[in-house]
Length: 180
Image (cartoon, rainbow, N blue to C red; front, side, top):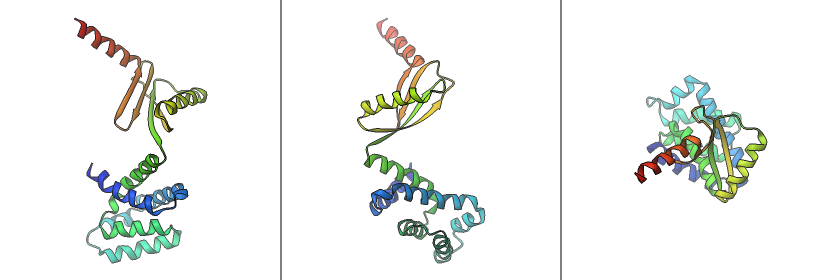
């Protein structure tokens, strides 16, 4: 939770700093730098090791940033994270950056759980219906959930919308218990 709070501050700052038309490019650059870190164990250990000074770390990172030609905003963010000893929050910052963009653009990220794989036409119909319900664009990740007997379970942030058969049976059970 603390990570998300800290990451959101940086994500909001980055979002305000970029040209709104460059969201995808900025997101890709963030992910690319994270991939560089994750694919090079020695680099990651060096950058996260408190033994090395901020200046030593910044010199190495500046060389990487100039070689790959990251944008000024990403370069400044990475160097700031090194200054503040918060580079280890980068993956959280990426997630929060995406969330900030989705909120600003009225996009609702959903997880849609179904018991079987859905064909593309069914997915389109579900998305169209959900866009009407939410009053905005929907980005959805369709997941197969073998625990579901039938129906659909939708997750938005920490809220679940249960349209599954098991959910309907549980509601019926609760209703019967209340009546007795």
